[in-house]
Amino acid sequence: MQLEKYKIDAHNNDLLSAHQRKLAFISSEIENSEAIIQKLVNFQIAIPSWALGTGGTRFGRFSGGGEPRSLEEKIEDVGLLHALNNSSGAISLHIPWDIPQNPQAIKVLAAQHGLRFDAVNSNTFQDQPGQEKTYKFGSLQNVNRDIRKQAIEHNIEVIKHGIELGSDSLTIWLSDGSCFPGQLNFRKAYQNTLESLEEIYAAIPDNWKLFLEYKAFEPNFYSTTVGDWGQSYSYVKKLGDKAFTLVDLGHHLPNANIEQIVALLLMEGKLGGFHFNDSKYGDDDLTAGAIKPYQLFLIFNELVDGMDARGMDHTKDLGWMIDASHNVKDPLEDLLQSVEAIMMSYAQALSVDRIALNKAQDENDVVAAQEILQNAFRTDVRPLVAEARLRAGAALNPVALYRNLKVRENLINERGAKAVSTGL
Ligand code: AOS
Ligand code: ZN
Ligand code: ZN
Ligand code: ZN
Image 1 (tube, rainbow, N blue to C red):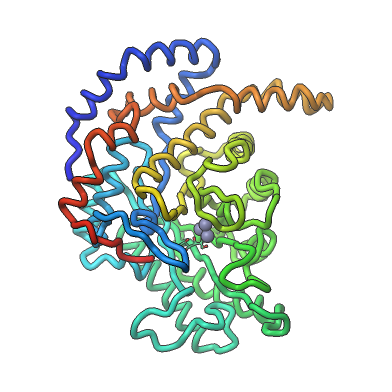
Image 2 (cartoon, rainbow, N blue to C red; image 1 turned 60 degrees about the vertical axis):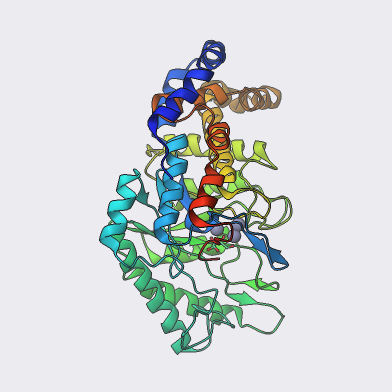
């Protein structure tokens, strides 16, 4: 389905005067609103290829229809999102779910939609058809050298696919761990994992990054071999300058102070990037900002503070990815909501009066510090985010336009009501 520019323009014209009223107000409230809008125009968040179809649980999956049946159609879907919000200019692929048959043609197609390839993801948490050895008892940690070798070779294969597409990072998430006490020798599992990661790291090109994701639990429920940020940090620190920790917001134990983790990793120069999502219980992979928007804002508050302190480029120096997969929404609408929530938190964090905050902190003025942060969080910055879209030629209200244009109905007509996304 094509989203012609004149349809976006017509939508924007309808909403323009109301938008301008709101923008004028907020611009008078926030001193650096113009600079914030510019930063929002430049900010891009990668869409995971596995979020384009309806997710499921182990109890079932209810497809919404019109889902992308191929890598080409996944790129088309992300292209639609990007046309609507101009903030989703990248796609993150999962191998082998998304093996490009003709990389050159895939690159051209992505470029036509203004998309680049973000981190490529390896998969050693499932056995693939025809695979020689099983990952039932782990991959990079496995007690069996041949199984470790198979997993290492898979990761190297993924890097090769990434190079062909112009990606510049590899994300490794391991399901490795154990389900029962005694099952695993923790030290040996660590050593095996480290050695395996070293072999993968050796295949990482010089201009690439290796992201090591951590997760407290699931599918293993007694121990996970890269179980928290400290464990990930311990590996990436040993690997070298191209290795970083990746923070998936849903991968922590309840009540973890994620913003503090982010601040410290950033300070250590080992924060690689994010998998944004939200959760109430575990790795729920709900829409970013749906449950704990204040937490999302506090994370961005640390990011802006820490990145600026290190002179980092907000747009380029971290990997910004979504990792969501829900069961009851249209996946494209959900992704539009996630991107919006991320942009809002970023805008709010940019609006924080840092000088005043530092002063309040230095004076132990707890109330003032809280007022500064909550003021920013309670300010409606949606007109700034909308203005950034307008200036970039995207839609003032992406979800509304998506519905008005009946995008899902069109995709169902094109692909069929039973079209189920490839991959997960
Ligand atoms: C798994 O819990 C992780 O979040 C990974 O990022 C995973 O590769 C992704 O969710 C796709 O399954
Ligand atoms: Zn993740
Ligand atoms: Zn996860
Ligand atoms: Zn998740």
